[in-house]
Length: 313
Image (cartoon, rainbow, N blue to C red; front, side, top):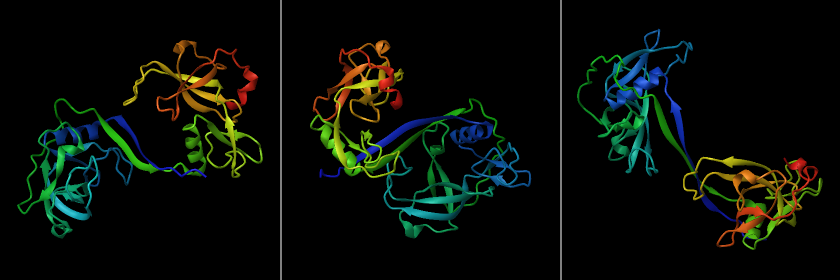
């Protein structure tokens, strides 16, 4: 049995969203060192502001400025800050009810240690030196023993309003492919493509997950498939991916390897993108280190008949 593999993986993408009038005013206010909340019909002031009352679902747009000072309502100590968090040194995550607000705002508190943090302590905003209209315009909170600040009464009307934000989303994790996929990866290192046959329906799945997705039974019988296969369907990629050194446009396809009961995906090369078609017969071109197929290219064989691959579309 091959060694079960593990590898660190990162999934990362920028999430772009537009802002409604309330969030637009809130983030623009942070850029201008103004903290805005929104007042509900019953007189509560919500910070951070929302566009609909969480109790009545009524639309609310009555913006009101609150103070940059406040009180910690609860907290948790962060011993090991991660990449992208507000501070690089240990800090406290705190919920702060700003003076004039009825709800609490989550942010970081710069404190020397957990013994210096307590519920009820007074804090104030530390503004970032450069601000763009984002929650990070508040660099963090810091301990404060002075009087409550007096807001100027800003109504949320600014020039050059922030209308959208880009929030990077990132997930770092360790992936273990398990027994079946470890065998598949080990086979690729030998330029072999291994699947597993279902003992019930007899289909060969590649890459195998260790069980038949149709019958729900475990698979163990290894079957070598390919190396040639048939393009079942495909798409033309016109947007260049970050950190992927492939010029656009290019074609990504589902490829039914000979002997497999499931199509896998791969890039098509060695042919103009507008000549790729369903039924095209292809073969792997291995990476420079020979560990995986870099892409698939035409074999020169006649196209496969549709009836031979229609079940794998």
